[in-house]
Image 1: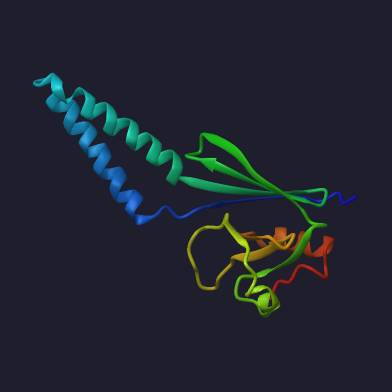
Image 2: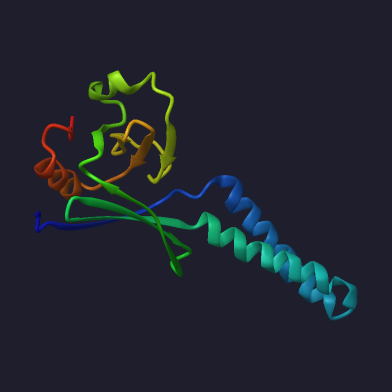
Length: 164
């Protein structure tokens, strides 16, 4: 049994359309509230725009937390720094390979028909710090772990985890 415990928190990039839509909804809410004092008919518009801005913020302001403990990698989604949801738990015994996204170690897996789940930062940086994990032959999970998490995973499964 491994005594390692590692946490990694990454902030997902918010899409540009979400930022623009959020500004428009908040502006519409404020303007509708101001006009509502003169014309009460703008009350539903203000309510709908306010609720829309709230839910848009909840589902686009995301952070992912990766937690490694006892040969299990758990992924939690944190929405708007207020609500946490367990997205998935992966056993490292069932993992096939864990390597950087553009690594040659993933060449044998490129032609597979798999479901892709992206729990990364959502953008390509230079150098690209995203990793791909193929799990049980049916899933491809994209993560953005820190060096400490990769080092611990490599110590637990040295033949499955690659860092170059």
